[in-house]
Length: 248
Length: 219
Image (cartoon, rainbow over all chains, first blue to last red; front, side, top):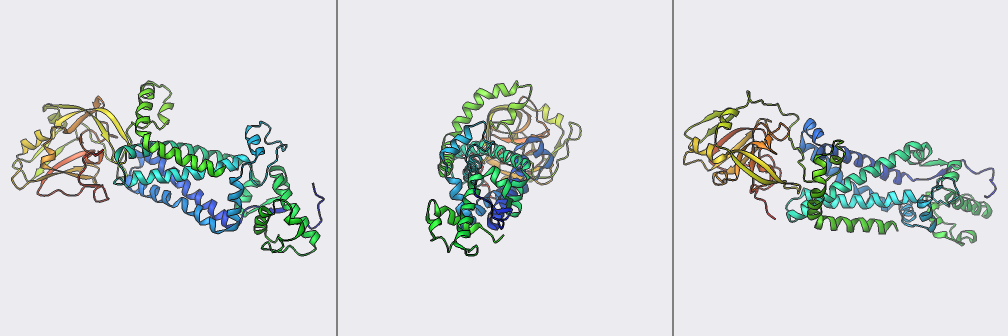
């Protein structure tokens, strides 16, 4: 591990404002969808609460809105950079998923661990499937009846699956206050990041060292991306992280 | 990899939409009997489909007992009437074993229904020549539905007193509800309180909200 320069900050920027906005908008829409789904699906809740038309409208329009923040996020470089990271599965990710000792720090973990990557893609895929089948069910004139029956079948099972996924996601978040802080305020402690995402910290520190050595101030917007240290290795990925970096 | 997971889920979703109909039949065939005998009730948490989903468009529906229940028949007809549950039970009963099909896709196959054929009540009322349709009212205070007089006279349209082999429960629209077998579920008014002869088909609750006035099940 690199020696710690005195000026090195104790916190690291993990999520940009745009990424957090995307996350929390999806969180609210998803929770409303899950609660209204429970009312629409569960017989005893349905008969206690009634008002099917209202509950249905809230459910359907929150569902239609769900992919919008995911798509809007693409405007922002930090979001695109993290999508790229989430999309990339390394051999050590496969190892992480299979290993019992995945939490002891012996397996290399970057900005996202394999579970987070899997959660991201499963959620995105399931949201799209739920949207598609929801459209088939809601606009009853769109397809033949047997496809509506099939859409109801798929919607039910995917809803159950995404419900479990969300519960799991929240349980992991409850156990990790520092991870929650990252999603609330954008920053995490360097100590936490070193324990949970050591390869990510190593990347950031390599950049910090590069900046230190080039002697300049922490220049922004990747305008120093042409310098020698940075052009070595996976500098494209690092350049994306630069966009994340606040002046801390 | 992440992209492959997303595409894989989409492919599974599409396959499920196309084949879900038959998968669900097979699943329900295997698990349905187990669910019925499952003392823990855990199997009912699995979305097997092929079970009823309870629809109510108002906040709460007052319960009507055998004593307090009345079905009024009125409008463009020679004889208005108000029937008690016992009156209806004393009339000839029609039994049907037919699917309950929701327009959104879910379906409960081969449900046992029995009650008074609507045509029996229509004949007793002697509709006037200007009557072309019947309108159903629900004692939930909000829901209405209509059928043409011709549809209402079909032998598979009944005023149901029994469903699933027992008196119609409150959740299912009891003590008395409509069951129009050849049509989507929204045509079968729950908590039936009145039948009114009209000179035109008036749009029902879901029909003013987008569903077709023609509710015949199309495959």
